[in-house]
Length: 277
Image (tube, rainbow, N blue to C red; front, side, top):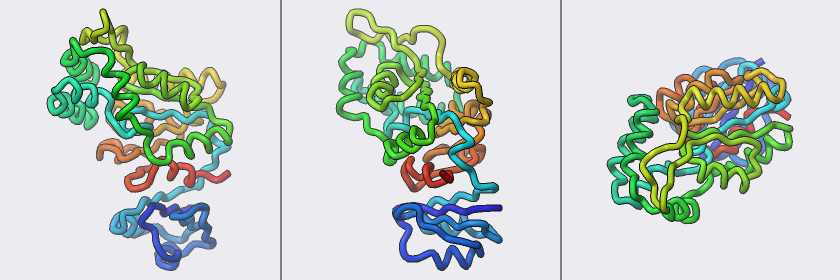
């Protein structure tokens, strides 16, 4: 059995064109802007048609249920939130373009993440620690659909994990604010109210992210296949690889090519509609 989900703000009209394209045995509209085609006969052309209309399409072979999963693990920067925190700190420091270019290359997988993070953090040496509060209060915004996704995961009994190559200043505040169960990130060293340009302890890289997801699953007594993982950059590929269901959210091409599902036009709540209750 194969289902197809088509969704996005640009979805207009009825389901006739999608019915003709896929030959489903049934059609449902679980939410505005969402069509689910049940037990389809064909999927050729679905992705191209959706792309032309700025819609997200997902072929589920087989359909998946929330009951299969125990964990929802998410990246922070450009996934749970709309910004890259380090780029915003760099902007305040007056070196936004320089740091942003390194960030983009690292997320595409062109640079070693540990080396690139240390290089970027060193450029922030001397920045007043108050810049962290400024970014959190004035620039940090949740990605569209974040709250409905987290609410759906909780209703289904999943534990939530925020795993980030960013900084604990932000992950811990988001953990408290959003009532997330676990978090992992890097700690910026601060002396006399200034960033030193160093990170305390080991860098949270792709391997560390995957290890944290594995640890949470082990603690819950479930395999890593019971984890849903959402990310956007090369640093997320390791944890996505061990997951039972991986989602590339507005991600780099390399990440989209290796994820089970890519979401490019909808919010994070699009993930909710991929699972049956």
